[in-house]
Amino acid sequence: MRIAVATLALLAILSALASGCQTAPKPCSYFGIQVVDGSTGRGVPLVELETVNHLTSITDSNGLIAFHEPSLMNREVFFHVRSHGHSFPKDAFGYAGTRLTPKAGERAEIKIERRNIAERLYRVTGEGVYRDTALLGEEPPIREPLLNGQVLGQDSVQAAPFRDKIYWFWGDTNRPAYPLGNFHASGATSYPPKRGGLDPNVGIDLEYFVDENGASKKMCPLTGPGMVWLNGLLTVEDGSGRTRLLAHYARMKSLDEMREHGLVVFNDSTETFEKVIAFDLEKCWQAPRGRPVRVRRGDEEFFYFATPFCTVRAKADMKSLTDQASYEAFTCLKRDGESAAEVSRGADGKLLYAWRTATDPVGPKEERELIEAGKIREDEARYQPKDTDTGEVVFLHSGSVNWNPFRRKWIMVAVQASGTSFLGEVWFTEADSPEGPWMWAKKIVTHDHYSFYNPAHHPFFDQEEGRIIYFEGTYASAFSGREEPTPRYDYNQIMYRLDLGDPRLTAPQDAAPA
Image (tube, rainbow, N blue to C red; front, side, top):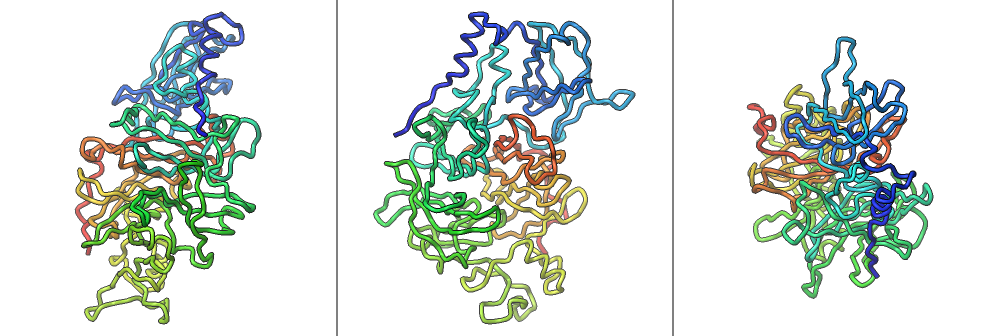
């Protein structure tokens, strides 16, 4: 049974403040610092302020810091200012920072310049999302601002509207009690904005599925050893006409080795996923994966599975989804039984891509290998978008694809495999068809030696007929080479907003398909 968890931590803080408890200084004891976007005036999360002796404070989701360092109060203090995708003016000695005089009960504002095209809004998951806001005695915008479902960190989001709510699922989840947490997926729900939920510009009120201890529970408690990951989350009608929430599961031996995979369906009674069918482990691509998007082709509807390119699809019905033989690959390779090194061309020599059931899909990696082998030309590529600023090919790793009514295009938000930060650079691109070709890309988010992987655009949050979109990703030191993880933010989901009317997202003149 679902257990509602109140924000006891916040109440405790407020109670301590009211009683003058020495372990929790009163709001008037803190020096409040807010770091704001110089162009919008909105508070910026994830900004680091570091003193000369390396005391580091990090803004919460309101861009606030509650500063209370007894030895540094009432005297001039220099703060280095830094934040991913933002800049601050340097002085004559090359220091990017500012002097402030911290005084109890007073406030200061710091303006920084945003270089990212996308705007960082707030942290979605983890502990202390609005810690400093609470310490300063201000009211956070969400119901659970300090600790929700005992979640300290969560990996890679999957989300889908289902019935009257939005259902959210994540991978491995960290808890306070021990370094090893929940490795069988976590879940929560929230109400859509039009049904009483918060405006996505403000935040998301997550209500976690929890166990008897109030901790985020196992959403896919399969038997057998190994981690259980969910992806390919979608809704589909079953044989009785009932809409079901379906996902692909993978029981993992390690980060890159599967023990088992197949389909699971959400059980409303137990509020967990149950196995529908186990798939052939030798046929990994013939399954839901990535982030599905419904696409109509003639009189038929399909699920296209974006990883981030749509190279696999299946008909949008339960029978097809549970039959691996029904999955099709978008490929330029000849059919099974012929040389896989040979590509398919028409009588006019034109390269032929088609949906086929008997040939493996061709993605950016396979396409690059065909180009380097001289099998296809560079101008025939569909998955080698070029940076609008440098003209260099951008190798995209994971992301999502959706139709956008404002751009009147299929749009993609995806992370680069090996950019200036490994799995840390997020790009925007668009095409006339979900199959591509994807000809150009513009960087919209950058990170300094930090990863931000598996970004997901949430079309159910789109505003102004698709002009404003929202996407989130996993901010993690993993894979980045960063030795010091960012406290509280590391291994959590951060939400961004992107204005598709920004002139910097204009396609270059030479981006038209050949």
